[in-house]
Length: 137
Image (cartoon, rainbow, N blue to C red; front, top):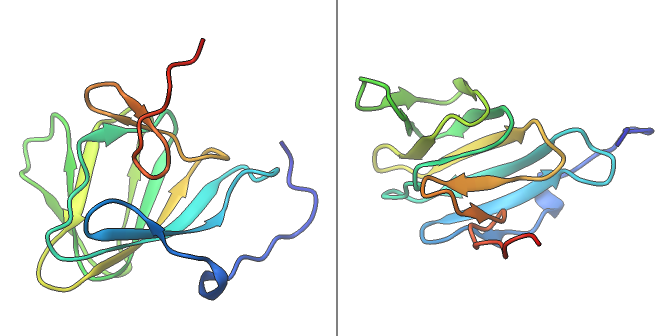
């Protein structure tokens, strides 16, 4: 897959996808020749992902609010990130994040893959909306 021409995506033109309780997602770029998958996630106070991983590098850039980020095996209870902070997550590292504090969290997720692939900690692969995928035959 090769990007052969410039592509512009506008957040104002992307539609919200339900991303489970307390969260929505706006996909910006991905698939169709793109080497990355990007989108903006908005999370209400109290939101937290399950412990999960991706088979590629993921970057989380905080736009608004504060995030609590957890890494499996880390001795710190959580790392708090604010606007302008970014975390780079190695492939296959189990991690979770959630909204820290009373304000909503908005972050830009950058996945080093044309499509978003998620495996929750129990190993079940899910789609971009967290729905379990059918086993491949």
